[in-house]
Length: 322
Image: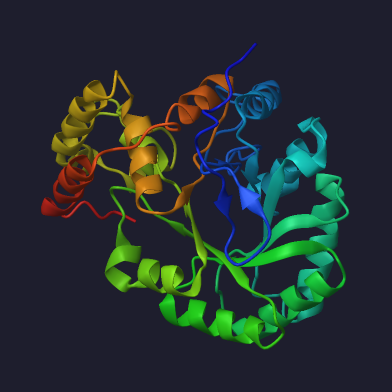
């Protein structure tokens, strides 16, 4: 029998809702995405099926996807391969406010399509993917309110919203008695902008859960990439040779700390750091091995001194690439 993550790891309350999620979830951006992640080259639908099953076996039951991931394939894979009772998992997806989507009806129509792909009658968490213009944030909040009223989603959130936008979304939803449950943003040791902008403090004050995407900096914090072996595809152009050289001291520190915790990997150190900061990381998992690796970040905690050392190491060379 496969080991579930330690039962002494408490669930996380999703904002001011009655939903509880695992302290670490799974991000499904790579499921079906050929353009950025190279789906079909090195991993396929069978790998995704095994990743989903392994997550369930390990007790990781919070899944985050989006209509734009793999042009809907990510949602479809989750709907098809998730064999566990739906009440035992928490599923989040996102609405993309493309420039040609101009009314709240666009959101409701998109949500209907997502529900169909996910094979669900009601989603647990529905989020606005980006605060793109030209449509005001208030219009999308009204769409989320109607989605809740129709019983199509249990909770609502946003993604990539700055402090001003987050406060505005919170205020609009509050007028209808609906809490803003979450804000999903990029957050990792190489991108700590939400600390500098005050967003993390605002979300704590308003009881908005921060869901941290790209907690492994798209693989850079795993140690698998070096100046001589850079990331493949588009990531090669985002993270250039000088970046990989620059982060080497941080990776060495992470490896040292990992050894003091019984041989924890770099990725497990990086994920644990984000949890220690009060966020819920959602690393990707292209296969069962990666799902198992992610689960190794649960059941223990970095010390206050180790967190301080990692903070310092990630700041002193200006490691902010997000």
